[in-house]
Amino acid sequence: MPMKATGRAPSWREIDQWDGGTGWIAHPDEKMQRTSHALVDGDDVWLVDPVDVEGLDERLADLGTVRGTVVLLDRHTRDSAAIARRHDVPVFVPEWMDDVPADVDAPVRTIRRGLPDSDYDLHKLIDNPLWTEAFLYDEDSKTLVVPEAVGTAAYFRAGNERLGVHPALRLTPPRSLGRFGPDRILTGHGAGVFDDAAGALAEALDSARWRAPRLYAETAREFLS
Image 1: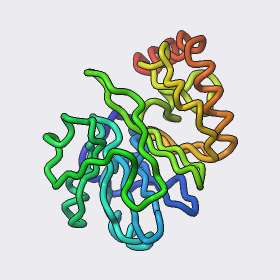
Image 2: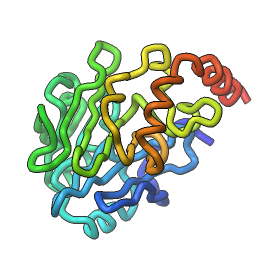
Image 3: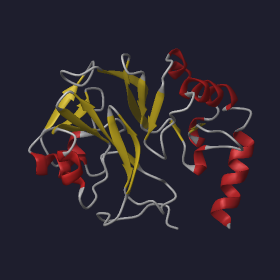
Image 4: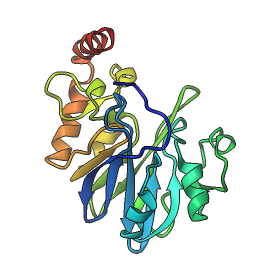
């Protein structure tokens, strides 16, 4: 099982289906479990941190018209440019992610407060020389989209956690996420949380530090096995 697969995926797994969109894992066997999402807002479809797959355009046509691809993490450009060029739309990037446009081979539009003409508000989560991350929140549907700070892939979770804080953030968990009470959480690594999402988020933030040693031990055993 590779950490990260390469190339356009010929087969993929669709997950996180709800009235407001869907998600997919392009390479189900990779350990990173890179997850992409299509957010549907009216007739518009927004693709968040997308990884390209065979048959994607046909699936998107069932949802609406692609309005743009969205990069929420400075190292999550993934296939956003290739998909944007194919649909003749821009790549939308938070305005404070200064380094991302140079890594994107497609037209770029910066966003400050949210996705244009949508209910998704944009929020800054981390902004330092090593890590720049934003997240989206739709107050009406209670949908939280977090690309990296929390996830459900195995290497994010310690013990029986349903949602875990990223290993590199365990000692300084992103507590600003705790002011939201989502009904669903969509992550950039692993399947989303749809059952008591607010509870899972609160537990993840509260237990991040004291469960860190267990997570590091479990991760070390996994990668050394």
